[in-house]
Image (tube, rainbow, N blue to C red; front, side, top):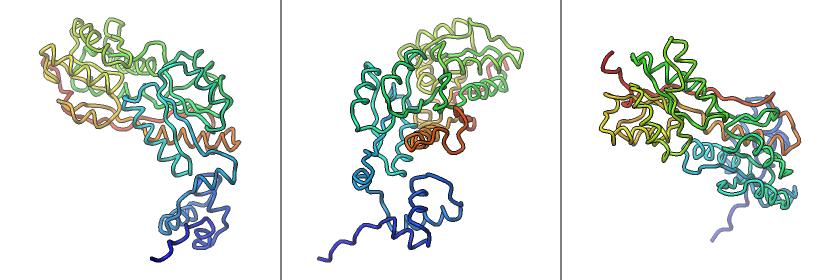
Length: 340
């Protein structure tokens, strides 16, 4: 048997491209400024030569664990599942491992425990907690952190999506179909995303001169178990369409409408946000506004790595980041109302 080939090193990649080892290191760790042409050549050469980051060697050299923690409140939520994928891809590309934790207990105690260990270099945290509670949780750890899927006043290290605009796009689609009585299946009231999506619903209806009063809002939060009662309240208001704050609750709303012997979309149309496999495996398939969930996870990792490296601003980062929504995906759950 022939001896195995030695692993490809940064020096091998640098020699192949004709640049310094430090330049290769900056590109492969996504740090610093390197010309686009040089960056492309380095990435191509690294892939062709089969270069792989050795996290153990890196940890021994730098006395760092190269491990990030991502805390989410719902593993089953498609938004968080997609954000985890985006974060893991970006972390692995930079030579880091991503540890995912489901926040099912005392988050402050968990963060305090982390402060006593060198296992984790930084934390990405998504939480449904109120702002003051989230601040206390973050204060329990001295690790660099990025807040995911919301903005926290006074904290620049936040990455979220413009779900208010996504709500506007979905409601405008329903208005364009001829709907004039559109209910909002709300997220958590008084919280960042819940309020932003509510305002998007209100803005679109107000612009069209349509009713957007509280009687057309039913809160289900992010729990599908709360959806049936909320849908019943909207149906009692004679809505012809429902704009749901999340894909999960939107699909649950369709299920409840089926139970009520109401046809979707013939009797009631449903529009939501976030395009995921779940939107395409139910009947009818769900009309939804795509959200940049993977991009959100990747951006959070890039920001966190900048903080870990001592860059308090980060390249191109001048405050909380709000990513714009994607396109409207029109499918079978929306159609003109009978009266249109």
